[in-house]
Image (cartoon, rainbow, N blue to C red; front, side, top):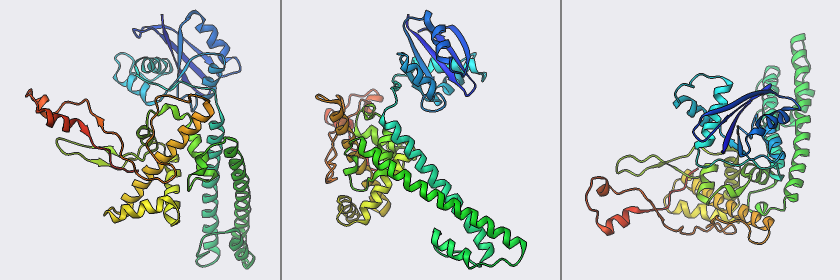
Length: 400
């Protein structure tokens, strides 16, 4: 009997519930978060020979537990937090919010979900993702520190610094200020402290960029060969993509990074709109690469952008089209890297259609939709040619 074990992880404890194929609860346990948490869970689950673990947010609060289970030889699924919430909301009799019900909902969601990512041991992509997160944190801290410093400077000097705050400008301005009362003296001291913080953050950022450069080179990736993908963007692209084999095609990858449009059609009107979904960090890296290519006339993306403008596209539409083209080129590089690292044969089931070197558009193969035509829905016999035309879906427009 196959058993699904749902785990609701928390900082102080973990709750596990085992169910069978009919969603009948077999057993439940709650263990404290400690060095013995995996040992206790494995001892409790020993009676279930064929078992699969489903950990909610295995990339977040449940990361350590999921990695420990994988290291112990267990099969672990990563369940997004939205799936158990829907299962608990729509299920009857378990709408109350508590840890046992949450763990049961995780197990049900994992049991009924058609496809869920399997947790794998942390690899080099996890290193790049950690460095990319640290870079974002340092950037946010520097922005906050610079804003606080500017707020104090405005109270000391009319207008403060008119241009962007730099260490040299702020230092020269503070040296020229002579406080005349205790209030100004306190503001001056606090401004000097913020200046020291700003200097420390910039030193940490430079050191981090050097580490990111070394980590990207150690990965032996070809992503950095794309125009606009330096050490930072390459680390973001590889780190947040993780295993590229989980994307069946470039279209799935574009949907993940937010460069594919969202269909909002109704009736006979076919409409697409800008996507706000997807991984925003990966979308930001692609956007920065697109802007970099647009600003350099010798880049392949600049010519593509100009052609889009000549076709009558607006500036934003042309940028969205270029971002989608870069997404396709990035996907091709990631797939090629995966095949090279996997050895002969590489991976199967992945298709690519982008030219990573020139970013020239290629006509994708026509995809056949299995949805019924309007004539079929009304019970009439459809025309063969009309049906064939209606079932042929045109390539989706590009968007962010």
